[in-house]
Image 1: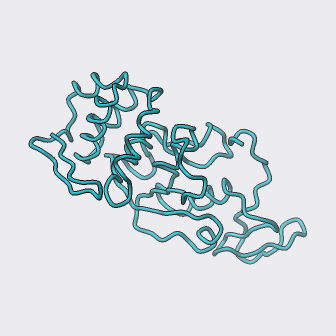
Image 2: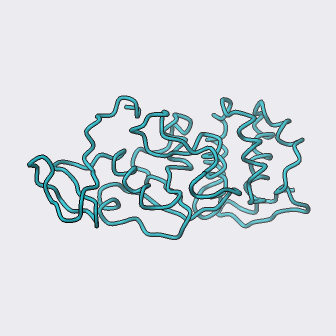
Image 3: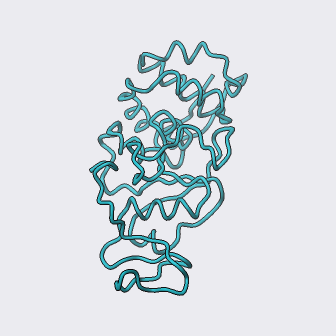
Length: 224
């Protein structure tokens, strides 16, 4: 079910600190100023409540790609990947209901109130903030190492033929991670993606000079 067809009556609602009822319904206090109506918490509503409280918080990486149908083989039980601007811990009311990981990540030259290529899911007012596919790919590549296998990243990028060249170029121009930029260029060329030549010929600040070398669980990764 996409954001445009979600029920409009959310199960998470911010109300005044002194009230525990709304329309005669007893509410459960989740946090200061945040109460839940009876019944299970709704993921979209819970994410929106979380995003109002955590600067730059959004669904990203593999999770975003899975929502867009690009990472088809990502297991349904995989934890939801959330990224944000500041170091933080997911509140108990959210983490106990929705398996998720949260990481502070400043991958681009941007501000938390104006994230690049992050929008409401399915462009619906009821949708939580989520990375566009192009940003999600770069977030995934930035995790290659202990948190993300290179083989899985390559397999996911094989389905990246629909990624928008102009959006990728814009994001790569603002990306501050040499590893992420070089991985994107290398995999795009290796997989023969339609935008590979344009990316590799672009003048990108984070291309860097010299080889980038890292030890991965799968072996040494050398990006020239």
